[in-house]
Image 1 (tube, helix red, strand yellow):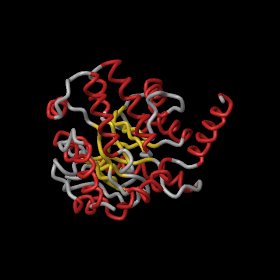
Image 2 (cartoon, one colour):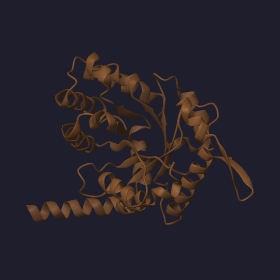
Image 3 (cartoon, rainbow, N blue to C red):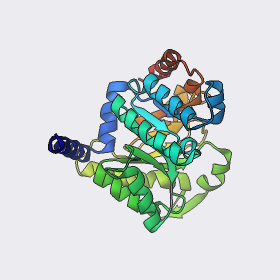
Length: 295
């Protein structure tokens, strides 16, 4: 039995590497639509659901979420910070949640926003992107603001294991604009730093597509509430778009910002759906309502 299980796991890993995150996401979106739903056990939501602010509370919260929409949407995004706040117990819940999301058939994005240099970035990559890691997700959010090249260890491991990255490019928080909208000159042209991040992700995707992939595995994070977003048409990879629903972003905003890249633009809804809990039928109904807007 052990040999059989090992052989099956090996075959599954081989399939995953043969089919990168971009192509796996494309197939999942064709099956389930583009909606990404967050699992954010925020203290105020725990209170609203009548759950304790404890490891037991976040476990019940996460299991309820997976039951409600894990078999409905293409992508589920646990917000790591709300698990991390409970220490080792919170991480244990996150490990189980990632496994439950996988069992429900959705792809997982660990929203950890990791970013560092050298061996530290390599260690983060091992934690979130390596086969066999209890925290391994299908994709990871990363911060490139120590320089895009600082992400090289994560890029290399994502390619090796068939996983993906979502690079913070243009976020919707007002504080981000002072850095992300600053302009830089490169090879005679001027572009924003956010556009530079998109363009560098696009270059990684071009390499992957040249090797036979239909879609790249290196996505960007662009807020759905932005008035002046970077141009995404050449990305040829996924776009994670937070801010839909409670923060005011709409299906029209997603279409406006994504442009020709819309087929892999993933509107992310968290509070707009989670407010319906703890009722599983209510959560499921709100998920389906939002999903219908994005096909």
